[in-house]
Length: 208
Image 1 (cartoon, one colour):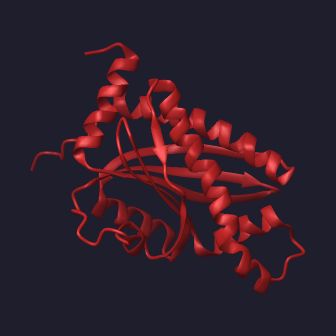
Image 2 (spheres, helix red, strand yellow):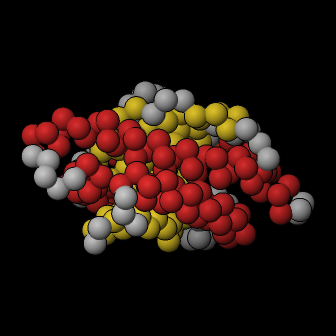
């Protein structure tokens, strides 16, 4: 049996990783100012996979429900940008942002607003990084809080989304106040948007 052909070749994956890491540097600087602590963000892994494969990958790695933020965007290409953390780690992250003296009950009440604030910084940094590098516009809607299994989150506003839609899957390492938290940034896009992204990379890199 022949190996499955990758959705995008390594050249394009490396180019996307470079763009995203620039955005993560900007997000880390903004979050450091927000919490008055050094925040380190990095994206050690970038994959283009089908939605069903992304559900399996994240589900197998986290083995728990997740919480985070979902934001639709459009422009040169369109899709849904989603920031996800395993449920327990999301509370650790929020406690690092709002302070250790907050009770668990108060923390749970603050979870949605704090996560939307964090997600707004990280997702907009990624989108702005891509828009600036490509010289194009990407417009993000107001982010919304999401919680549940990865499948529930991916299909929360589009039950009929094809399982073969493409996910730009970024494994993200988030370090703050001696806490090392792993999360995921995903961009759900159809093939037309993937082709548009590929075209923008080709133009930027000056290749055919």
